[in-house]
Image 1 (cartoon, helix red, strand yellow):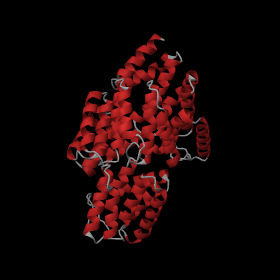
Image 2 (cartoon, rainbow, N blue to C red):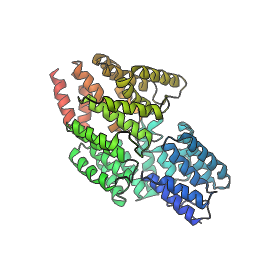
Image 3 (tube, rainbow, N blue to C red):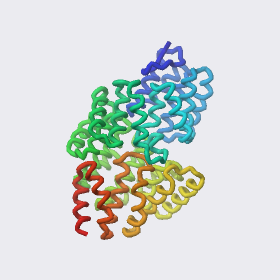
Amino acid sequence: MICDRYGLPLTTDSDRAAAYYVDGVDRMLAALLGADAAFDAAIAADPGFALAHLGRARVHQLNMEGAQARAKAADALQLAAAASPRERQHIEIIACVIEGQGKKAMTAAEQHLAEYPRDAQVLSLLLGAFGLYAFSGRPDHDAARLAITERYAKDYGDDWWFLTYLGWSKTEAGDLVSGRAVTERGYALKPENAGAAHAVAHALFEQGDGAEGRSFLSAWLPANDRTSFLQGHLAWHLALIAIEEGDADGALDIYEQHIKPANRPYPPLNIYTDTASLLWRLAVAGKTGLEAHWKDVAAYGDGYFPKAGAHFADVHQALVAATTNNDALQTRLAEMAAREADGKLAPGAAAIGLGRGVAAFAAGDHEGAVRILAPLMPELVRIGGSHAQRELWEDTFIVACLRAGQGRQATRLISERLHRRPSKRDLAWSQEAARQ
């Protein structure tokens, strides 16, 4: 019997197809480039291998190649008749994700894992900053992610992929010491794992250790150049450290060299959200002369996210449109409102409010931005992503308060952030707020 790396039987008679498939899965789990070629090779070795078609569909989906993703998922579903019950469920769950049926996929994945806890690809769907839990709109997604990883910790033991996400889940849920320790255990088992490098970067960010974060990323990125589809996002983390240290020019240099949307081999959602958020942070920090970069990002978003749908892209589109084209922002907010009315906007009205808040900020209406954003700060978690990503809207609210002469409104939020981790910027903002 041929099995995958987690001991689960595979319905194929080809050792070569199985080996290529396992390699493709590991590349997906480690956020490494090349999974597409591995799955293609598995299909060539065994055209009837349903899971290989499904793996290829998933890569297409991450790359925003919707038609190809649906076509390969359809192939997998057709071939699943000859597969095992576990494989059929696996295929049906990921096919639901590809079809945009996140809530259905999340419930089915939880049920599937109760029977097949070592189906790592299915578990991976629930995890991460862009996982089904994070994008569900629920305010407890950090706790849900930690609960399910702890539930299956004994099933995975010292698996390099699992330790990475167990550690990251602990970190995002506030257990920084244990989270970092577990993450570093996983990283040591497979240092080329970009997912592990990402989790280490988050642990260092949450502990406010910018010097070590810069040292770690400055070594890892060139050592693993052109190997990972998280390369641009890890450079984004490095740029955040520069902004924290007051080096906006350094952050912009990192953006221009590693992040801007210029034929990058990374998933479009990563590219769009990283570029939009970093430019906005630079603008909030007082950096000027960004107009050409904003136009590039706007054009990229128009190509990949022309209409409301993926809400995390939508809230970042608001940043771009508020800076470049207010008409486009109003159109997107109307589309989001229609989706909310149909029950299709996972974070609900909060996502729309964030767009209105950043529009007021971009227009220089800081009092209006404070009024809109203040009640949304407790709801911010609903948009998903990580703490590091969501801090953009917190930063905007804090700076709006300071510019409106209402610094004391931001005092509680700044204090909560400083309690979580040290920050030169937050300390300076706290002192400025106290003077108002």
